[in-house]
Image (cartoon, rainbow over all chains, first blue to last red; front, side, top):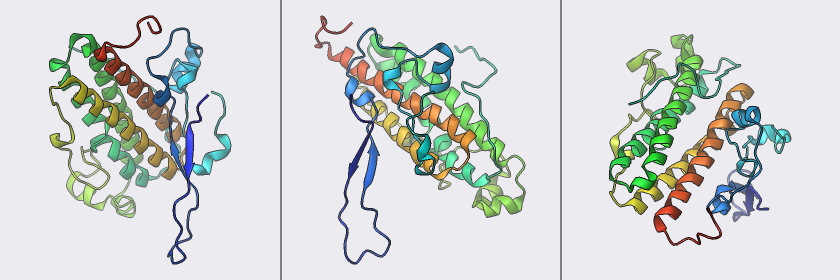
Length: 76
Length: 189
């Protein structure tokens, strides 16, 4: 299973004017890894699919702001 | 032709009066990677692309208009009752001077929408790769707007729209695979 977020560590100068952010993250959603969608993937129920924006569980990758982080990973 | 259904693709709720969010959201309305640019790009590319993927461009282009309508609703709700003072405080003074509380196709910086945002190169692979890039850029834009927004109801709708960008990107990637024609037909359907 691929992870939906990756991190990297930008260079930190001793002379940075602002408090350095040592870890930066970026999004790598599931579509990057899927290729052609294989048959028989697990589906959401119709109501869940309408809420999440996709019928396919494998493509569900919600984004929460860092201020809502506690909710990340919650199921629909 | 189109058939219009008088409802939004996903319900739009806005819980706090924060016209500043409208200034960010307008990026997805009339920005380079916004929904208007997406819809016009895909629907226009349909004519000169192999038949196998025309339907995909029609479907996704149409859905982008449904997204445009959701963004419009969000912006409208955030600004419809804003006084000139509130518009000023939200950094929308230049917008107000020109448009009152009306919506307009420009980006978050106030630059009006232009057809130079989109391309139809006539080469199917070049066009589909542009479409994939457009979806990823729109996905990223939604991430940055969600990061700046503290309105949970609004973020709910934005998260739905971001998920749709992921699915659209996936389908465009599959369209490229279809046009490549070399994929292993035993392994995939």
